[in-house]
Length: 211
Image (tube, rainbow, N blue to C red):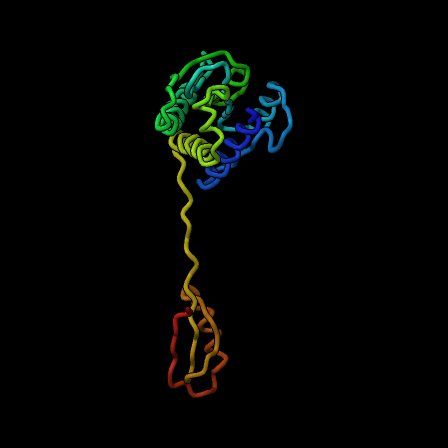
């Protein structure tokens, strides 16, 4: 189990969940097993013009729990994002019995040198048995990703996309003869199908719901 694999999996889960919200674009600094320097990560975010920067990490050193960091001189938007994201993720980790290590400030390079609100999260300790056991579970990694995304959505007032179900289709039957399948939301289809029978006597038109 390697930190780089876990953090990439969490980041991909975050991206997938965020894309279910309206007007959201997500750029990962890496999509595979490659190394980017801290400076390069900041350059990517700054040149892309991101509205928010999130750095996902797994801790080490024999501790326990989840913590989050903003820059020591962080903007109000960074602190608001920290409030929402920390609360969402801590709800998941607390349920597993992890310690909530708190919302902190630091001078970490990536939160200092990005030109947008920024947050760094430390999602458990890879060398602590209890944390590591949870991090081995794909369902837990997914839950961490979704929690981060929901925190971002709350911080920035994002609205979830509404899935519009496809319209029902009907079989158009004229004079007991099947003519066409038409959408209930498209009267033009119905009109076009009926026009084919202009000049014929039409005694009965039926729409039969397609099964």
